[in-house]
Amino acid sequence: MLKTEQRSLLASWPLFLAAAVVFFLVRRLYREATIGASRRRLIKENGCRPVYKYPHKGVLGYFFGYDTIKENYQAFKDGNFNETVRHRNFKNHNTIEIRNFKRAFITTIEPENVKTVLSTKFGDFSLGKLRGETMSPVFGNGIFTSDGEKWEHSRALIRPSFTRQQVADLSSYEHHVQHLLEHMPKDGSTVDLQELFFRLTMDSATEFLFGKSTNTLVKGQENPASERFIDAFTYVTERMARDFRTARLSRFLPDEKRKTDSEFVREFAADLIKDAIASQRDLERGIGEKKRSYTFLYELLKVTNDFETIRSEILNVLLAGRDTTASLLSHTFHELARRPEIWAKLQAEIDELGGHPPDYETMKGMKYVKWILNEALRLWPVVPNNTRVAVHDTVLPLGGGPDEKSPLFVPKGTPVSYSVWTMHRRKDFFGEDADEFQPERWEQLRTGWEYLPFNGGPRICIGQNFALTEAAYVTIRLLQNFRRIEPRDHAPWAEFMTLTMAVRNGVHVGLYSE
Image (tube, rainbow, N blue to C red; front, side, top):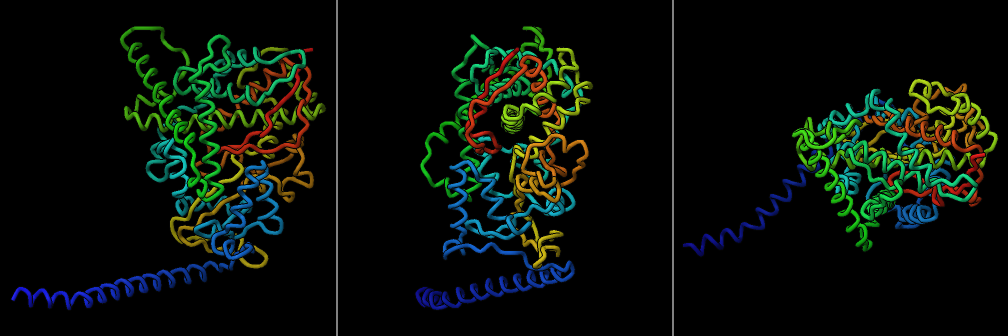
């Protein structure tokens, strides 16, 4: 009897399998039909038109975008990635669809589209899985790697640390500037300012974050661990940038250094956090000298004691705080060294201070300093490209149809990237001389979403005033100590891309105090 039932069940098994297959196929077809009907309705209601599709070359290009991925990788190595993207994607179009390995994505330089993604339809887009998969192993789930409630929580934790009161405390920069000056010859001997700027901002950022600086510029306090931290931090962020620009195909290449450097960055940060926590506990027991300066970590400890949360947020802010200011200063002085007439105008404004360090309100009123920093951020935005991913079907206002003036349908899961680099060079916004460094354009220029050095919308960089204030202060103090600057490297400018952008060859100059 049992064998008969077993045979009966075995005989019925193909029928059950066939029924299951039919069920799932019918359900999938029903879902696709429903989604298709919903999409057709959305397209019709908004008057969407097709977007221009990039003409990929070859079978691998057509299906996987291999041709442009290969071109991106080479441009990344050569230091001209952003210009390659500009001339390839946007020579004749402002919005296109282009394939990148698994799927097609939309890329645009239309301010209205960028505004839609970052602001008016903020809820329709997320950071996407790629950013989390690329950055989280080192930076954890912090403000720059998270979405939704986690991002809102991170922002709420961090925002109080960037109030006007904290930003306006210029005394916190002065001793770091003095250490910087100790490394700068005054007789015209060649020095790489970019290397010094990245050390300066690492020192100032770690003091602000941990209450304890890496002190890489303090002579006699050289620390091999701090030196390795700087190198490791730079290496892992450069490898992350490569992942972004090759659809993460580069992750299949062997890279033991990336693994060990990633571990070191997290361990180094953990040690600084533990030391800072121990110091804070000693202070609470009346042991040691009370810190006068504001410390980000101590403020975080007031609202959370979760160690991983603290480390993640600190590493996220360190990335922005260190790289943004150093990149801005490097590009500013790279240009000043080649433009003596601009240096002279800047020097004249700074000379009105009579050699005294500026206070916050005075510095805010220094127009030419502001114009120069704005122009440096326009031509060399710290983050020249960015991407969001549609979390459900949505619509962009421009990019559809032959004239690209019609709305554009964006299916769920589609990445939408925007090239800040290219948008900042649009002649219809910034004039026929948009490729030139002209600070005076800011006397009349009033910008909107076409100028995005610090992103926009709810995720606008909350530390932008902090970065601009530090950059302005350092610029002023350097010109108060030096009367003349000369370039010592006449090679064409090339980019060095980590998660931010710097000058590939450094900023080699000679400075004279008289």
